[in-house]
Image: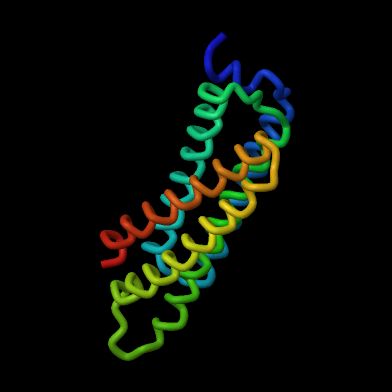
Amino acid sequence: MTLIERVLQNWSRYEMYTEISLLVAVIILSLITIYIFTKNRRILFLSSISFVIATLLNLLGIFLIDIFFDIPVSQTFRLIPVITHILLLTNLGLLVGIYNSKREYKRFKIGDIVKDYLDDSIKQSIFLALLGIATLLFVSLQTGAIISISIISTLISIWLTYWISKYILK
């Protein structure tokens, strides 16, 4: 049995298609909303990259959990992309908020928002790390795996987004 078949053995085709279509719809609606609020294609491009990174990290996390810890991937693992994308959307919301608050300044350059975005990313990372540690103490192994994948995927996505933003938002 291949790795993908092994991970998806508990899911029907309908569930897979529904999950993928809902996730794509949420991502597209989020990107449309980000564009409506910013009217900036660079921020839209950065947000798109961020969602792709988070999705790939979610898949990688699920495969690693299945391989190394031999935890069967069940219906509850469908929460991982939802949690990760909500947490990532809060980070992108901070970026959009910073952009909207600073773009009215006379000498505004889009590169100026990267420093404030760094400060907010640090604060959110500390919060997520503390939340994850506090939660992992009181949950089962399967729930802990879901929380761990979600938080680690979000943290890596946040920092890769920040790193990429230094190049895109010049």
